Image (cartoon, rainbow, N blue to C red):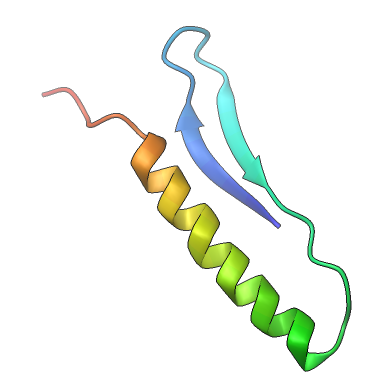
Length: 52
């Protein structure tokens, strides 16, 4: 699972957060949903506010 976390302010390169979820069962799907929520929370916290 990969989530775009914005651009690095120093280098200008794109930054991604990654996490691997193993399995194919319903339990793996639930773990993936939780991981996605966690990654999205981290990505929005790491993105600096836009400059006017």
